[in-house]
View 1 (cartoon, helix red, strand yellow):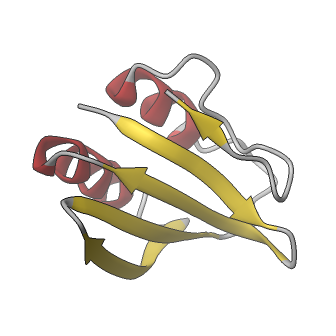
View 2: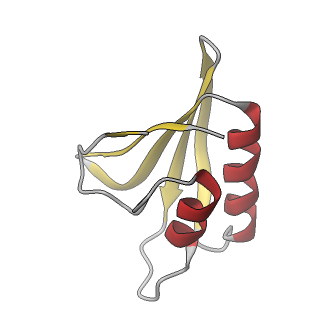
View 3: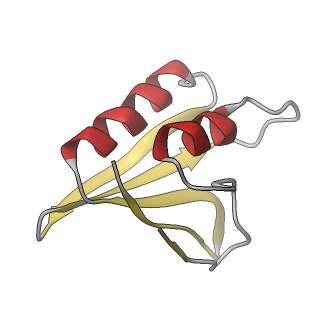
Length: 91
């Protein structure tokens, strides 16, 4: 499973955009969103050129939900937490 890019929009810090290049990666992220649906939801899904872009809406919560740690474990990206707005990472 590959997470190609992960970033948030500068004007929408509670969004998280994930670019995934395999169906397995998309399924893993969607399962995490389902588990944490009380706090987070999928805002949009776009497929282009064999890649899927998921835009997640992360509701601000006072208590850490564990979503970021679970995403880190399932994608195998070290430190896959919420990055500052406008930050982009590559795996």
